[in-house]
Length: 129
Image (tube, one colour):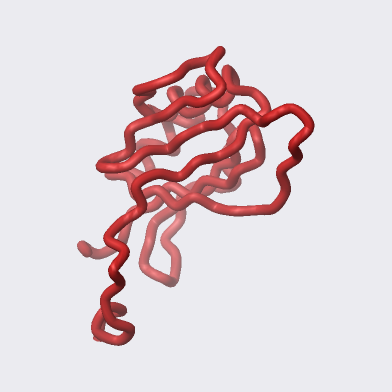
């Protein structure tokens, strides 16, 4: 039985965007573009920048003066080629947590932390969804 058959459908259809706070917009723009993210708005000097991800967006917002941020979170992004993106990350001098692996929950993935400490998981289901 699928998750939706067990728990029902939600009125919420999808996530349109995720916004992360950055302390270094230029560094974060470089990090994400090196992984192949497509910048569609903003840039290194902007206070707000957006990348297109499928039908949605990953936004970066410059940390506002005096306002602190705390906490932990992980953004899980499905990609077409986990191993290819891992190699690309290494080519750009990035340091993933560990090589890609197959997880017991049915995904191949690797983790990478962005310049502001946000944890990213790049994954692909092991079986078609």
